[in-house]
Image 1 (tube, one colour):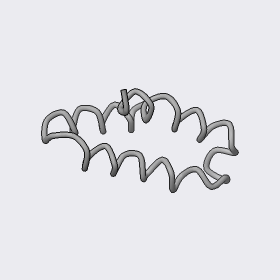
Image 2: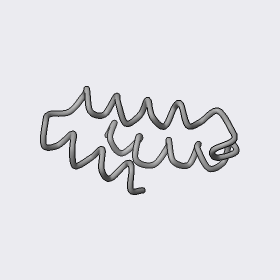
Image 3: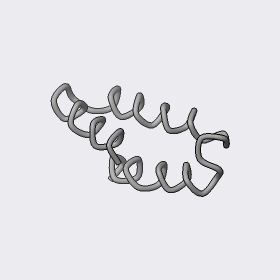
Length: 54
């Protein structure tokens, strides 16, 4: 559930709040780091790559 939030909510917030010129790049990086810390090794790698690609 939390990974789903980071895969959907953070990218949507990024694009609706001004993209690169808004304040969301910091939150987007935080989402990726938080995912890595929250999940195990292989699962963290897979989900992080999905976050970066999407």
